[in-house]
Length: 361
Image (tube, rainbow, N blue to C red; front, side, top):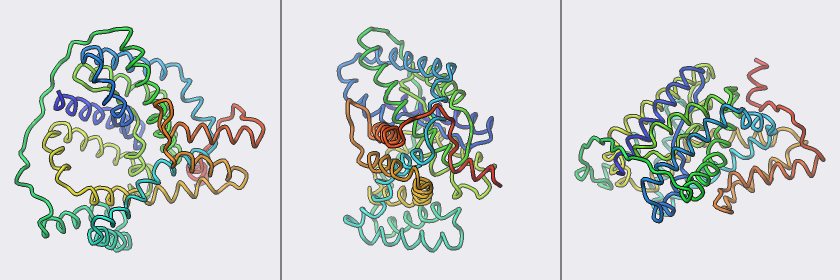
């Protein structure tokens, strides 16, 4: 079952990401719902798997309907740019901190990766992350800190599950999964795109990922969505100085996702043998540029600086209430502060700083 889930969800998000990136010429990265996985860990223990599959289908239909209605897109366009940037910076802050937190466990590894990153950024910023990945692996292998002898090549195969539908699964699985994915993935994911100046409407993204989720659900896939953290790596200048060519990063990401799906069992075993400090440092360094630009965008406009800062801090606190993650509550805190401080929240379509900069060129 696990292999089928990895195969269906990875190949599925790879296909949807490739199609959306190519169709709209923007780096639209799709991924699986990470907060959805955290939610399902507990709920699947008390829900028959066939009923869970039925709930996945209902949740997917909900996203398709939401995309057709256009309601989510209208809401996203109302969010002030400073709050959008503060939300993204808050989501990514822990990754940046973790880049150096690994020094508590393996200080030499972190020093090697950091030194390599700084030097590579000076001479070839676009390939700095790939470079420190290679250097890090060479370092780990030379010191015997990883053992590849336990890794065996295996190809995953799909398993079709006949779905069953129940009122219990509708309320206990489908509805929470829909809300968690919408607030924890779609919202920050769309703001990542807008923050870097990309204008694709949320409507086709919801429809395409919803359709992907619908067809992949019988094989164990719980939910596709637009990516947030992964997308942040591919939407900025590190992917390409020319924003019109960054869609290639979206296509490349989709291809890698498909490879992960096909060889998912093998790659999962590979990641398990890599030190946690190595993965955390690599991810944090890859996101430094995005964290910096997001903080700059959040604090650019003096009038909205305080509400953007509230959004950033509330999101970074990562408080989970009612089963909903910190990104949603950070956004709620920021919007509430904006309304109370400025006295109103007009139905106005804001343009993010990234879009404004693109239009000025």
